[in-house]
Amino acid sequence: MEIGISKKELQALVREAYERFKDETGGKNADYIPYLAQIDSSLFGIAVCLPDGETITVGNCDYSFGIESVSKVMTAILVLKQYGADTLLYMIGADATGMPFNSIMAILLEKNHPSTPLVNAGAISAVSMVQPIGNSEEKWKAITENIAELCGSECKLIEELYRSESVSNHNNRAIAWLLKSYNRIYDDPTLSLDLYTRQCSLGVNARQLAVCAATIANNGVNPCTGKRVFDEAHAPRVVAMLSAVGFYEHTGDWMFTSGLPAKSGVGGGIMGVLPGGFGIAAFSPPLDESGNSVKAQKALQYIMNRIGAGVYSNRRVTVTQDVAAE
Ligand code: GLU
Image 1 (cartoon, rainbow, N blue to C red):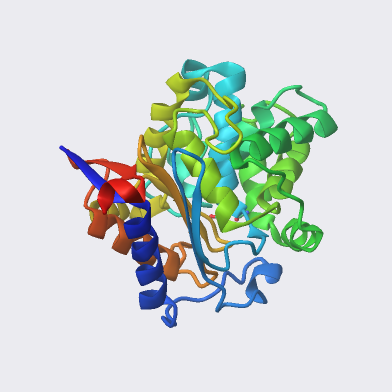
Image 2 (image 1 turned 45 degrees about the horizontal axis):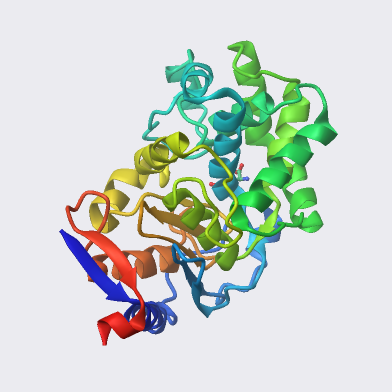
C-alpha cells in the first residue's frame, strides 16, 4: 500500500519530534574517549534528506560531531565497491554478533570471520582491505573520498578527537592483533587500526548523515549531487547489514520498535535508511548503556511510528509536493 506524506507534513512531524524530546535528560556522553565526554550534551538535531535532494532540518544539524561507528557503513560500502558482496561475505561476514560493539568474545566465538563490518572487529578488517594495500596515504584518500561522495560534501578530521581516541584505544589494539592471529587482517595491523581510528574521528553533521542515508535509500545515487556513488546491487546488502547489527546487541529491539535500518555511533549520531523513501539522521551526545544516542533513538522511533512505514510494513511512503497534499 502506498501512503503519501507531503513535505510540509513531514517537516511538521520532524519539528514535533524535536520539541517532544529536546528536554529529555536520559543517557550520558561516551567517556571512554575523553574528547566525547566534554561535548555539550544539550546539542540535538534531526535531518531528513528526500529523494529530490531537499533536506528538512531542525535543531543543531550543522554541528560537526565525531562520526564514530557510522563511518563503518561508509567503509563497508567502499569494500563492496572494491571487492563485491561475495568477497565481503567471505573475508568479513554479514552476521549479527548479539554482543557489544567492541566485543573480544564475539571474535573468539566466531574465529573464522569477524562477523560484520559494522562492529569494531569487522570494521578494522574492512579498513585493512581498502586498496591500495600497504599505502596508508592512498587508503585514507580512498576512505575520505568515498565518505565525501556519500555525504555530498567533505568530512574533516577532528584532530583533537583523533588524538584522544589514539591514546585510549587499547581494546581496539587488542582486537586488531587478535584478528591478525586469525588471519583476518589483510594489511598491516597497526596501519589498519590507525586508519580505523582516524575514520572514526571524522567530523560529520546530521545533514551530511541524512544525505548519506538518502544515497543508500536511493540505490546508490546521491540525490543532492546526482552522482552514482555505488552500484545499485549493493544497496540491499547495506540495508541488510544495518538491519542485522546497526544497534549492536539491541538491534532486534530497535528494528521491532522503529522498523528503520540504522547505524548508531558513540559520537551521538544515528543514520537511518528507508529504502525508496528517504534518509534520516539525528544527533544528540548522551548514550544508553549500549552506546546508542537516547534522544536520537526516541526522535527517530517517534517519526517512524507516526508515518507507519518501516521496512517490515507493506506501507510504502512517498513524500509528495505540498500542493498535492493540500
Ligand atoms: N571509535 C569507536 C570505537 O572504536 C566507535 C564505537 C562506536 O561508535 O560504536 O570504540
